[in-house]
Every structure is written in structure tokens, then in C-alpha cells.
Image 1 (cartoon, rainbow, N blue to C red):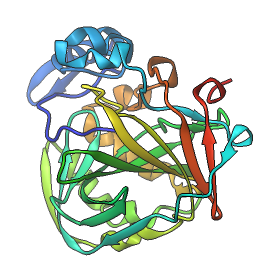
Image 2 (image 1 turned 120 degrees about the horizontal axis):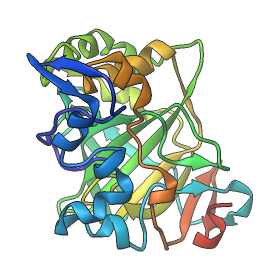
Image 3 (image 1 turned 135 degrees about the vertical axis):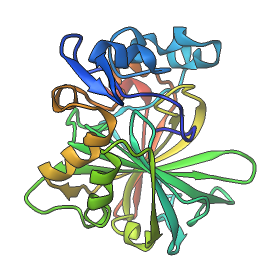
Amino acid sequence: MTWSRRRCTIGLAGTAFGIFHFFGKVISCQELETSAAFSYSGDTGPDKWGSLSPDYKACSNGKSQSPINIVEDKAVRNKTLKPLRRQYYPVNATLVNNGYNVEMEFGNAGVLIGNGKNYTLQQMHWHTHSEHTINNVSFDAELHLVHQASDGSISVIAILYELGSKPDPIIAKIQSKLAKLASNETEIDIGTFNTSQLWKNTHKYYRYVGSLTTPPCTENVTWHVLGEERSISKDQINALKAPLLPTSECLLAQATARSLETALFGLAIVGFAQKILFSLWPSLLRS
């Protein structure tokens, strides 16, 4: 999950070999990697994030890092949580190429209500492939809806995508804009976006306290991973990747997701499924 907005990065690494033209400059995938503040492979990849900046130390030594693997059959039931309460509404949105993911910025698109707070929906972005896994199963993409309360606390809803013949209607509405974003645009005004489409499938979810999944890997982030997947087409996966790299060769080789191996964690996980809540302890989260 990305919190900081509009980072000044240029692309991500895919391979150290091919040479390509980017904004009129001949540049390699390896050079693209080192030009970024962080990336998903090589010398600036997830296992090196903690050493890239003093501000990134939590990426290496944090105690409740995200993402995690959710093990369903090791959950402990907890009946205190309720279905997610969200009050979203149509709002003007901007599509932004951060260099490491595609982000839609709202500013204020409504609220997620929980823990006695109103968390404002400020942005959402995609990772390909998924960052979280369920029963050690990875998914083809993951959408993060990022909310922040007035006290600065962060709450994220994660939606998992599975490759299928049916395209995702949310991505379909911006797919032509993604193509434009891929042609050297850094941000595009997409007009009014109806966030009420994001209300579906909130009766089954897993809740835990973790971290941002990109530097600075700040902890004490409340996560809600929805238990029902959305369908996404192969064309849509490629459309989400296309703005991030100048070539298809780099594109096909590059994932934009933090792996479980680089995320350290230590807190319990709580989930809500069909009006029954669950808790998982860290030692049971991975196998």
C-alpha cells in the first residue's frame, strides 16, 4: 500500500539488459531502477528498502509489517466486528503515474467509519500481482483504498483480483485514460468518478494492524482485506502496468508488489466473515 502521493520517481526495474528510449534519452531498465527512490527489484528492491534512507528503517526492522498471508482455517472467532460502514459519493478524480503504481487521487471521496472515527477516502491504487495472499494463494492484482482520519491514523481496504474473462467495471471506466497515461503523461483529470461502485462485498473481510507496503513502511495501519475477489481481464492487468515502464520487455518482467518474504510482522489478525469474526496469531499466518 502506498501512502505518500506523487513521488518523483521514473519507472521501475525489469531487466538489466535491454536498452530503450525514454523521454528522448537512451536508458536501460537497470538505469530506470537506480533512478527511483525505491523499486521492486535489484539494489533498490524490497529487501534493500530499510537501508535506502533513515526514514525507511521500519521496512527492515518493523514488527508488524504488511503484506501477510491469511490462513483461514487457523482463525479464532471474534464476534465484535461489524460489516464495513462506508459513505462514499461521486467526486472529481485525478489519475496519477507515480512511477511504481497507478493511483487515483480524490482528496475526499467520503468516509470509512470505524474505531469511533471517520476515515476519509483520499486515494486508491493498484498493485500487480497481489501483495496479500490467502492460504498461500496469490492473486493477479490488488486494489488499495487508502483512508486517513483527522488524527493522522490510516485505514486501508484491500480488494483482490482474479484473472478471468469478465473485465472489472471500475477499471473499464478508466482504461482509455490508462492508455493516455502510458504515453508519457504523469497525471490526467478524469472528471467525476462514482466511488459507490466500491461498496460491494464488504460482509466478509479480514482485519489486522500492519504497515504501509511501500517506504517508509509506517506501522499501525489498520487493514481490511475483503474475502471475495473481483474479476480482472489480462488486458486490464497490462493496462495498469503500461504507464509504469517505457517498454513491454520491462513491463512483462516487473511486478509492483511487495513480497511476503520481505515483510516482518508481529500483531494478531482479525477478520469478519458472514457475520462471524476471526482472529489469527502471527505464528499461524504463514506456512
